[in-house]
Structures are given as structure tokens and as C-alpha cells.
Image (cartoon, rainbow, N blue to C red; front, side, top):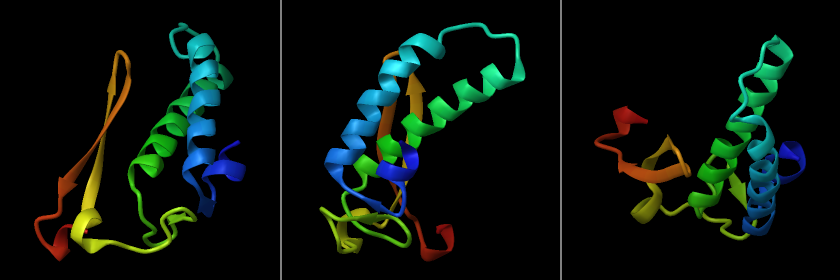
Length: 105
């Protein structure tokens, strides 16, 4: 799912699909207290899938290896920012944080 939808070339509709599928699985896995390393790894992979797809959907531009087919150009006027992701009880909160200087990149 991640390779197909959140790999090198991405689009908004595929990112939304990834979030929907990951959220369904997360309901069954993320709130469980698990005992084995492989189970923790699944929880971690789902968490990373949700965070990566959320931040990729939020950034509506192409920058570096982040290529959005629905937003093919970089836009420094809006997107020269860091993406801040916070996990909340309801999911994730994605926001942009201004870059103070080019040294912050």
C-alpha cells in the first residue's frame, strides 16, 4: 500500500485511499497491548503509514523526492516550511512551521 500510493509518485486521491485503509487497520491494532516484537512492528508500521500519508497529503506541492502528480511544481511562497505532525486521541494533527532561515532546512 505504501509503495503503491505513497512512493515516489503520489496523488491526493491515492493518499486519501492510503489514509482510509490505514485507519481501518489502525482501529484493530493500535489500541492493543501486544506482547511480541512482530506485533509492535505492525503497530509502528501503521503509525508511520498514517503519519507519512498525512504529511504527504498536507503538502500540496512537489519538492525533492516528494512528487505530487496533482501538484507538480514547488511553491516557495507557500511551502518553504517544516511539516509538524502531532498524534492526538482523534488521529493526527498536521501543521506547517515556517522555516526561519535556509540553515534550518
